[in-house]
Amino acid sequence: MGFCTVRPLIAEEMSNWTERIIRKSEYCLLRLRRPAMTRIGLLLLLTLPSIALGAESRDSKVINDRADVLSAGRWTYNDLPKGFAEAKRTGKPLLVVLRCVP
Amino acid sequence: MACAAFDGQVVRHDTRIEDLLKKFVCVRLVQANDLDLTLFQFDFDLTFAVFFLNADRTIYGRFGSRSDQKNAEKEISLEGFRKALTGALELDKGYPKNKGILAGKQPLPVTMKRPEEYASLAGKYKPTIDYEGKPAASCMHCHQVREAERLSYREANKPIPDQALYPWPMPTVIGLTLDPKEKAKITEVAAGSVAAQAGFQAGDEIAMLNRQPIISTADVQWVLHNATGPTKLDAAVLRGGKSVNLQLALPNDWRVKSDIAWRATTWDLRRMALGGLVLKQDPATNMALRVDYVGQYGEHAMGKRAGFKKDDLIVKVDNETRPMMESEVFRLLLQSKSKGDKVPFTVVRGDEKVELTLPMQ
Image 1 (cartoon, rainbow over the protein chains, first blue to last red):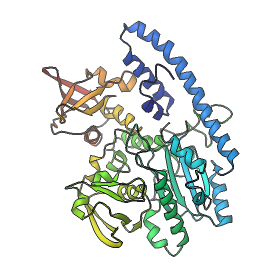
Image 2: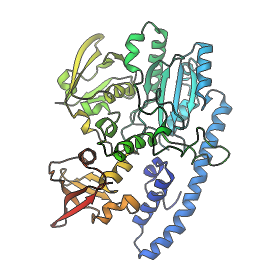
Image 3: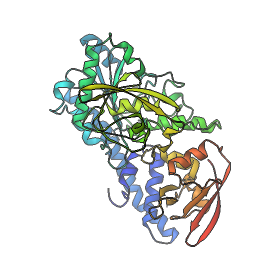
Image 4: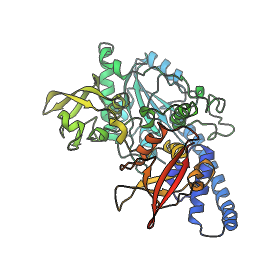
């Protein structure tokens, strides 16, 4: 992801977009040692494409997760009532995974 | 991505667990939107968590634990997961005769039945992910539930209770280190800890805790999460093939030593209590807290505006001079100070002491 992934694990855990943008901006600024105006200019140049790419990547992850899991046919996806109905029908217990994808 | 490797193994039905997964109806939920909080009560900072339950909504157990920011899979393993699956199937086999011992594993009454009932989340998310529009942005994350809960206290000018500040304590807080490859087998007991005082030994396998059958570290955490000190918890451990009964005495404030620095939700606590500062134990003194990071924007820059600088050593917070972890500073301030209160800090910067005042948010 380039320059702005200074602290990728922390950034990764931030799901709220506002917080993510603030964090990315902050960590990028921390790395810069230039006058304020230059910092802001560089910040915009460097973070916006990165954030845009990040957004694409996050959306893709969500979409691909659903597509991949559904195509494998082993999981009931985002449909708890269907899972309960299946458990009642088969007599099997349920295993529910709660997963934060993006 | 945190837990991605482990999640991938589970979702692909890895050959090491495939035979057991076939015995379950497998459901994958990837959103907290409209999540049933009357059923799904877990560590909301996790990015991967598992519930074992039956069609009657009776919970057999939970799986998924974390204690580290960088290594999200330190506390879990496929071997341990396999054992938890086996344990859940055994409990299912014994149902409903075992209903009595499962009672303590069931969800507790909650104030909010859905995340969207919290004021800070109301109206912001639809019940389902918008796959045709903005999937990621439309997905509510589990950690937002914990943040919303804390905000509800803060906005009402009420202290944030210990359970919300230090959720889902790891067993290390009471002195127990568990083997991630087992259900709940003890590898180490910290000398002088409450666990040591109770008689726990390395090699013991926790079979029952607080009259609940234990099939994972997360099950131990469930018991601890709901234990408000001072209290006593009965335990049964398997030691050398025999069952040994123990009693764990948890003192008041036992959970305060939980290190919550790794948690995503701690970011918002730092905003409220520290104006965006990140504090770490000073390696030189191991006593004072060092400012490791100063937030730069918005409410996370309150510390910066108050005059804090990176590497300041905090030696006094609101007349409190005892050594504290960052997690304890949150408690000190978020249980005694309201939004707008101004808290005096003393920091050492180079050779001089500097007095600063930090507004609470």
